[in-house]
Length: 219
Image (cartoon, rainbow, N blue to C red; front, top):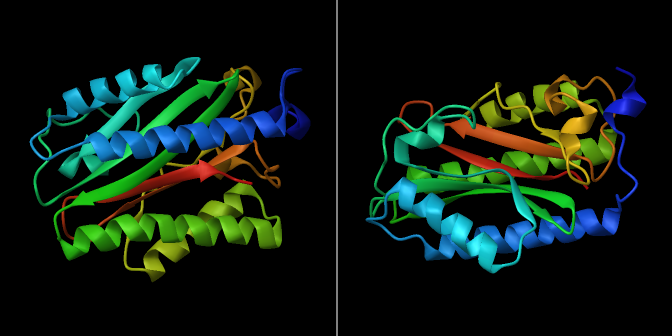
């Protein structure tokens, strides 16, 4: 497929609307995170997430609400949780939202910690740190999506974590971006255009059974 087709947008597309979708999705994510408490099961957390999105007036969900607790933070989007985990008082969890606002797709993900486990706190922060470093590298160099994820793997290792190389980011747009069949950001061999691609970073602790996730729009 031509590069132009992979970065195509619809007639309704606007960068301002993409930014609005981004801001609304982050506001929803923060609201959901604040509502989660130890003792809650993953299934209940996911139901709550959908309820709060409806309250906030979303158009629709373009991918299912995904909230992972504990060991399930190692699992990818396409993998089912091992069990309906209960959030502990000293635990780690992430939230991944894909939501349509005003016909444009928002996608955001972040990791949070309950309690004071230092490894968990460092892991959650590291996912954001690696994201920021990779996004800055994209802005500074204009490199390809392939090169971005090569850089991401190196930065994760430098910080003492292991990057999940099966998570490679994706397109967003005015809904639905799936029309363009653009593939993964990590397989894109040209410079990603601003406001059209989600950079996803998922890392794992080198010895303990948990990880962290962070994603946002490349702008």
